[in-house]
Image (cartoon, rainbow, N blue to C red; front, top):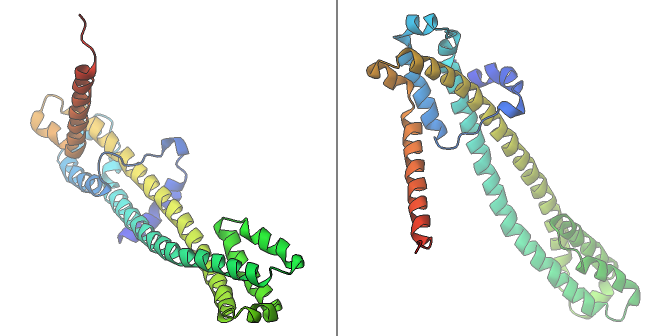
Length: 258
């Protein structure tokens, strides 16, 4: 069964996980969690009878492969969505910057061309006070329509009439891009949630197997080692070193008692 099939298999199960149970990987990369789950599976197989005798539901061990492959797939999908969103964001940043420049240029040209037309001033004033992206997109379309309705006034100041078509096209392009960007953002958010749900489902099984193994083999260092996360242990050691260094720095900065 493929990673995608395994993710689809558990979607209904993980979707029922309460929000207060959801975990997000922090100190250990997802790839390391998946690898350690695979190692734990093979390690636990040798201790099946002992683990079951102390209350472990063996289905948790048997289900590890499905859970870990589901996490790997969810992580890959989320990363792909994230990259796609970044590419759209970069495209938006580039095109929107040019769009704002175009809007400002049209406003400057229109103010001069319509300087003696009091009836046109309210629209120009309304457009010039708007700052956010959706209204900028609408402004470009409005300016294009306004310009076409007053061609003689623009021609009198030798305005580049092709900019009216450019404004309309840019407005259309940005509307489509904004919709794609919004959709991508929503997909990334949902993708992360599914990844976290799958990770939670894996972690709950791994934690229960490790807790049982650590209890059963608390006097057997060789077997115990297989129920302790190497990456988590390293992360805890790094955190302890950071805390110790921070405490030492604080003590050095604190005034000494006389």
